[in-house]
Every structure is written in structure tokens, then in C-alpha cells.
Image (tube, rainbow, N blue to C red; front, side, top):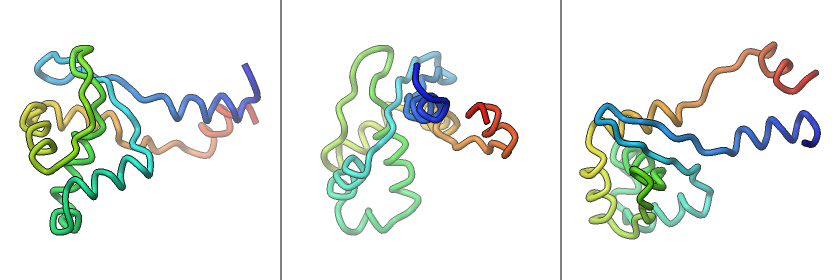
Length: 115
């Protein structure tokens, strides 16, 4: 299976799935630097500076599928807003919770890495 470090890195790269309050299964993707760059381009120069708007757009763009139906990455402002509307408060909240970085203690990191 590889080294302990390789297992930790592989586990960190796995995108989670989450079920929202409406019972929809949301399969997520971790956005790469290129994905984020494309999202900035889709949002346009003004909205790319609006941190609140962009934060919600990142959460929406992190959805790869809803109930196993693929969701394409949004390519413009209207597609971003349509995806946010489709997800609604329940979907956005579930994505935010699923993608929140867990705060691991040094002992938990060492135990996971096998050190």
C-alpha cells in the first residue's frame, strides 16, 4: 500500500461525499489551482474581488455530482449562480461542512502517519 506518508497524502486527496438536509447525495471534488483560476475567470474581475460571493461560488464549484448525476464546472457567472440556486442553503451548508479542514493535533498526525 506504500509508505505511511503516501497513505496520509492519498487519504487527504480523496474528495468526500455528503448528504444534505434534503437527502441529496453530493459528490465533491477538491478544486485545483487551475480550477480556481478558471472560476475567477468565470466570475469576472468585479466578483472575483468579492470574497463572500467567491466563497459561495467555490463551494458550489466543488460539487462534482448530485445524486450521481454529474455536475459540470461552471463557466460563467450565470452558471455559478444557477448551481448555487440548485444547491440552495442545504446543499451549500453541507458542502461547507464537508470541506472544512479538520484541526488535527500533532499526536493525531503522528498516529496517522505511523511515526
